Image (tube, rainbow, N blue to C red):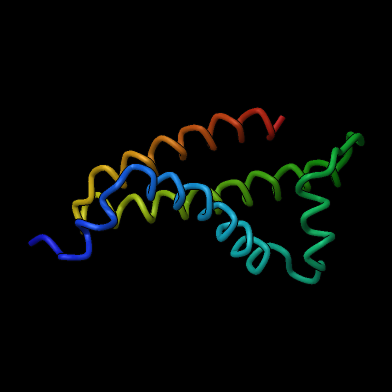
Length: 112
């Protein structure tokens, strides 16, 4: 069954826009789940900052980065699932998948 609102949203550019916005939502979810007692500024500085030490603390920060990136990309995949399999909006799904692949490639560079 095709929903009437899907005709309006079945555009590649809307998928790209959703692909840009959803990792930010995933980052906020990761902050709520992983951040525990850190402020948002501390959490974001640990995520974006450079870790120069080779000890247990750097391993914890690396794991936190990986988990945060997983949350960011997981939101994109959740949107893809609903857009492609449930609502059948294919052009929107192409935008989501394209941007998710780009984010995944960038995140592989960022994890190192």
